[in-house]
Length: 503
Image 1 (cartoon, rainbow, N blue to C red):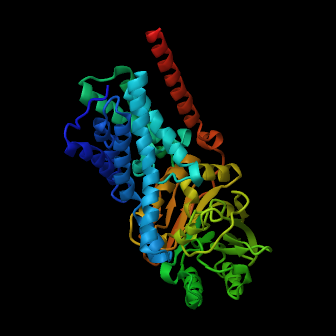
Image 2 (cartoon, one colour; image 1 turned 60 degrees about the horizontal axis):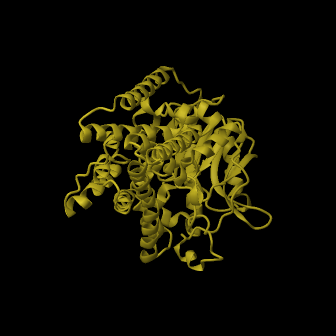
Image 3 (spheres, rainbow, N blue to C red; image 1 turned 30 degrees about the horizontal axis):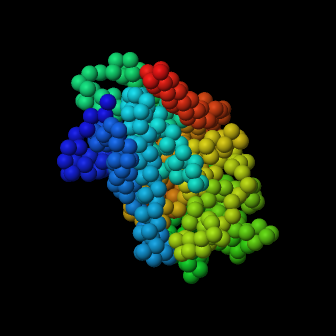
């Protein structure tokens, strides 16, 4: 059932390591997307039937290699710009990598357990177990659905379109299913006819649906100007640079030759409490000067003295048309959890202050349309974009500051997620990043305009307001419910067969 090639101590380690390396190579910025369809095969070969503890360690080891290669940038963000020492930064990275690797360890343990104890073939159980664990990872402990297996396909647009029906987890399911079919053919020298044919049909149907969706004309009717100020993180919150920052954004906006319907500045482009600052007057006058709505990221403070990571839309009349305060905050970045119980955690938090969460994911109603604002990594969570669209958002805008990550892989990984948010919701995504990557992404996930990282730029392009709800927006992660019920059915059937055999 689980043939193993791990005959020596060397292969004992090399197979999970190979899987870990392949899982890194298929993700941005390298993006060898085809490798995702064979990445898990070495890990499958490393498993031995009946050796549950060893199989867990195989998955854990592969996960450690994978996530160390994918999220190493945590050290850069915490140490270089967050004011956290190297020891604590490395400790935080190690804990995060170990935590994420537990999911791959659980994957191999559960899959091999189902094979050995319940005689459920690996190609039947593995895809379901993988996506259920991905889903849990996206929810547990505030959630971290970063670099899901499906995200490796962000540049394969015909395949991405299916997420408007099924959600992104279905695409991860298909990728694992292909891995399993190939593994079965290589190890058993035969093709699993029924299951393999089903996988081929699902893949083909997804590509056909994607080709049809991509063939439909898509033209923007409104104009946007995205201002990428390229403010270094080490000076962004320095009071001495405040005036220069304000003048840079105003200057770039005035220099833009395109008469836009919407001008967008990134997350905390104004890194102070805007409506309490002397710069307020100059900024409120800007939309009238350029005859455009202005959406900008800043900091807000309420009557109780609580601070928020916020965004405002300022209309052509110089009035604040609406605002949004970030709901899903970054643990250890925007707030520190559990400090009452573990005071030492304060030493592992970056020096950006302690923000409070906003009340709800609701769009801002402006002259330019109903704008669904996603601040920083809120757009990593598909349920947040779904909620925003269900509440009436006609266009999605991601305001972010990826300067934290310097020239690591993180800005490229973060950018890729918004291809999926666009396709899932059938909405344009306008992305304003302080140091890049800023972009305009159409509802099929096509990138119609983009910047590089660490360049000062005004990105001009077009977008349209979209209405209606996709199947995925309307029903959410129903595929996960089906996967869970299917797994329950497999387990129940395996238990009944085992009882009948023993009885």
